[in-house]
Each structure stands twice: as structure tokens, then as C-alpha cells.
Image (cartoon, rainbow, N blue to C red; front, side, top):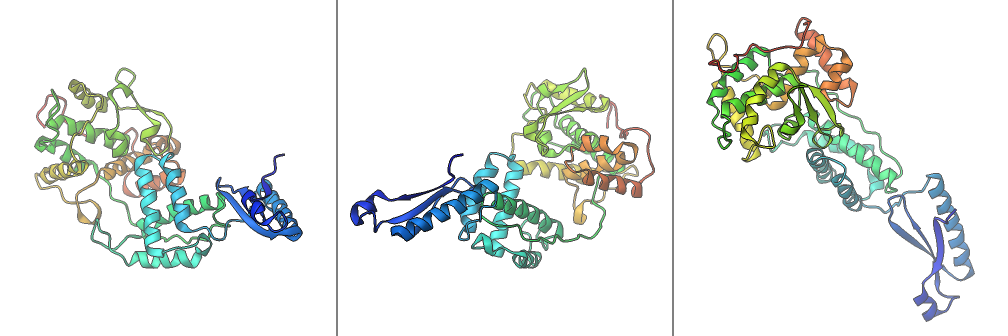
Length: 384
């Protein structure tokens, strides 16, 4: 077996001071691949100390008990972490991970990795809950803090694996209030679907009207439960209209795996007109991303219920729905009629616990249904 720690003297020191007075060193590569060394002093004592230390470090590296560098800083670890997530996460996950760790560094101000303990985490939680979100102008929610803590915990596990830290401190997650998450109800979906006529964007696609584009998008989201990010990356080549399936590629979803998802015939019916644009993407959007939410809000503002009254703002905190509320709507209206594992596969949840939450919510909100929920919508060619 190759020696994982070795002793040596620097040639320049030997030349200047002589072998008896030149210091002995131990060199090794830590689990993170960083080359490290330690001086043990000159002479026979230094050589003996270097040999003993080299044997100790070799044993630790072989058995996986390497003692982490007690002087490793947060900044050193974070540079390594950035390189790690850049090649392994999709863009949204990577950005969320890095933002969470930067927020932790800003609030907790960690210096050495070994100094991060449960008290540090608790202080971070307390300070973070007092802050105001720049995006919502409201107090930071418990759910946001828990999300940040999950990324911090995963990062600290890597720090241990890489030899930057000895252990992961205990992290006490917050227990959010058991509020029902917002989701698009069937009557609200039908109202906004009909209101797609008011959409004026996208207006740069040949042979495809903005209304058809939005109807296809909203229906796909509501009847598949897909995330908006992966939906916007869907390619026409990945839809098989004859087989009635869509290929959800690994590089566009959180599960990091290819999945062949069946599509309801009604979805295929509304997606078919979008092929006339001859664009590689099903839903090309050649504008700033934020305008997608702006147009969606405009559609909801124009939506009318069956009694002609305006559709109320039933989204989170009394705002218009977001695209993720369509995903929750899919789960809610279909959870009671599907096998738990079938729903998990369609929702592409990595954890079955997440799927079980939707099943529990569905039992509380509606009676069981026998088939996949199909909205009451006008046929192609009919006036909405």
C-alpha cells in the first residue's frame, strides 16, 4: 500500500543549514485533496516526531478517521463548495444552495469551521427570523429558514467528508404552523383558462397566438404537476403525440433522471397547435423571465367566475396565484384517486413523505374521485 503520509526535508534548508539542523516535515493530502504539511523540528528528535506523526496521519487516512484541520476557515470551505455544486446541481438548485450559504455566512459570521456548533445555528435562526425579505417585504418565514438550514446541513456534511470539520452540529429545524398550502381550485383554473384571451405575449411566434400559448402552458402545468422551470425547457422533440407521452429530461428536473410521463389526451389536444411555430421549444419565451409572472397575473386579473364576478386573489398572502400553485392544484385534485407511488412518480417527488402530505390534504379538502381530474374547458375552435 502506498504511504499516504511521508517525511521529508527541504533541499534548500539542508543546503543552507546542513542535514542535522534542517527541519523535518510531514506531507499528506487530506480527504478534500488539499496538499498539507507540518514541521516537526530538526535533528533526531524532529525526525522521530515526523515519523510518528506520518504513521498517525497515514492510519487516520486509511481508516477514515482523519482529524479535520482545526484551522480550516469558512471562506476556504466555501470556495471548495462553490466548485462542487457548480458541476453537480442544475442552475436553480445551485443558486438556491449558494444563496442559502451566503445568507448563513452574512448572519452567523462563521470564521473557523470548528467554531460552528448548535449555538451558532440557533443564533442564526433567531436573527434570520427577525429580518425582512427583500422580495416580499415581510418577515422571513419559517419555511424559508428551514430551507436555508437544509442547505447548510448538507454543506456541513460535505465539510466533514472533505476533512474541513470533525462533525455536523445538531440542527433543530423550525416546526412551521400547519397551514394549508395555496393551490388553484378547479373553478379558478377554469376562470383563468378562459381569460387567456387577454394575453398579449408572446407575440413573436409565427402561427401561434398568445392565448393558445397560455392555454397550452396552464393546462400542461395543471394536469401534470410539472414545475414551471422544467416545463419551459420542454422540447417538441420530446413529445410523442401518438404514444401520448413527454420525456422529462434529467437536466431539467430535480430528480436528475430521465422520465417518460404520460399526457392526458386533452393536454395533447391543446399542445398540438403550438407545433405550428416550428420552434424547438414547446413554450419559447424570448423576454425577461419576470414578465412571465406579470402576464400570468394580468390573466388572473381578467378572470371571471361562473357568476361573472372577478376571480379573487387566493394565492399566498392574498396575492395572485404563482405557477407552483398549479402544481399543488394537480396534486390536490388527484391525490385521493391515485396510488401513492403513482402520484409520487407523476409529481417527481424524491421523498414519499412529501407526496403523503398532498394525500392527507386531499382527504381533508374533497371527496374521492374515480379518474384523473379533467377541467371543463371549451373545445378547440370554440369561443371561450
